[in-house]
Length: 346
Image (cartoon, rainbow, N blue to C red; front, top):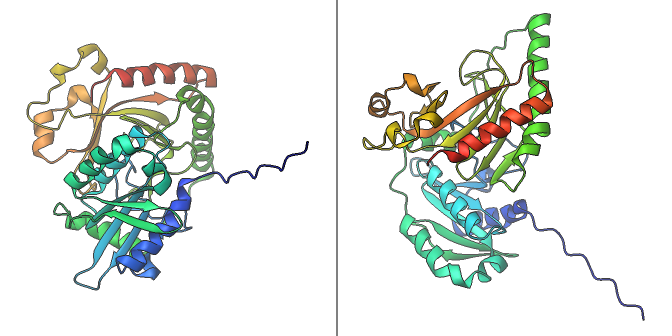
């Protein structure tokens, strides 16, 4: 007996949440439709952000000068359930200095399936002052966000200007000689091969954020350009084709672990197995991300760095040189560094 063909359900993807969310911000929050930005809309939203982990999903601007308000939404599919929710909180926490109102957004159907977690999750959002949007064909507001009292006006304006598309000043780019051009091109191309080859193979699993070939972080004013980005939990992998972090021009892959080593005077490297810290580098930025350090941990005075304000995006990491290495050798060494990073405490 013939049976009707089952209609294949369309694959749910995160970007499908963005348009309904943008419509909600326009309709319910009074955000200017000409300045509603969402990831994948065709216009890059770049602003000073250390490792580049601050890449919002939807941003809107309401009001007029001098009372403009920035609304920022982080959306997730809840495929990984509790992990996805915790990741959403962590990303919103990192956005606190940038926006007046912060929202978490999830598919309504997925949220309603999490009855065991709903009460706790809503309590976590309320405690932080975050709003909650449930997305179907239309968006339902489940929680109203509180006005964020931890806005850093410098970083707020950086994001606002990026959303509004303030006209940039022209930047002069010097021409490279034939030899330098060939060297730079080869470094970038080899690093791309490494990221989609041995790095991708060694990582496996399902990351929180993964873009192993895109230029996730770039800033022409400071000559910052990285290729590839992978973030899972507290582990961060980033390709550095031009030696930007150490300013030495050497193409490397960085394996970092976010760390609380500079979080408070009580944080000390003595709490970590000293063998794990051998050859480790410390990366840390100031709050406005206009100044940063990346240097051997053995040369760092953590108390001095903390007093000078280097307390953002703090990581311990090690670089993997890719010059004069085979892909198999790179994969083997990368796996060693990944295991090392996973042993480090938070």
